[in-house]
Length: 269
Image 1 (tube, helix red, strand yellow):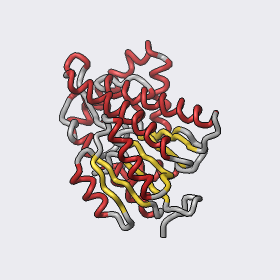
Image 2 (image 1 turned 90 degrees about the vertical axis):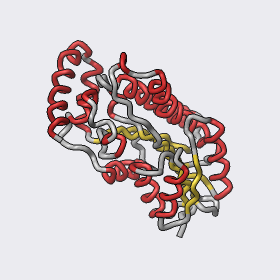
Image 3 (image 1 turned 45 degrees about the horizontal axis):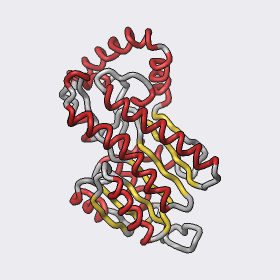
């Protein structure tokens, strides 16, 4: 049975980057709650595979999150199905390289997907939503300096700032749409495994372990309908990131030392 949107229509959830990993996990969790899923991914075949694997009704659509018009097309299609009550901006890319080794293409793609993809998704979502939740998958790297991830961290910091400002703007005009930002530590996905061979990825391995997709999905689902605008997973790692941001002089000495520990763990994998 579908959840009622409050208007006697089917509640619809849109998830970007849902072809695999966290996006696919969130799509499954939302489907289990009874939403009609609009599953999107730049890889149309992957989006269709996720949609086919869901227990409930689902619609697969290709989506390049760098294109504002593509977001609007997905939003309009979702609104034709029912009332859009959840929109998840999950699509992202992970770049690990020193600033001077990053290519123009890597830098552009990182900001276009991780930052502008969230911005375009949020704008398309609130154009069609009467009420509900926009959940943005951000990152702990957006809370403080992450050498080896300067571009990635900056893209996530911008996405976090935008999410928080938009939530306040919507509340100020009493629109019942909540914007939630989930900031997880490193998650055991293909994004991480694809860059684990690079020395610049050392900071990925400074935690006690990698988070599972299920842990992140559970945290995200717990934010829907809640009063919590931002959540970090785990909390203690967020405290370290914020300390690094607040004390840049200390971070300049301490963070490279921590990165060396991560490099040893990376090599021992």
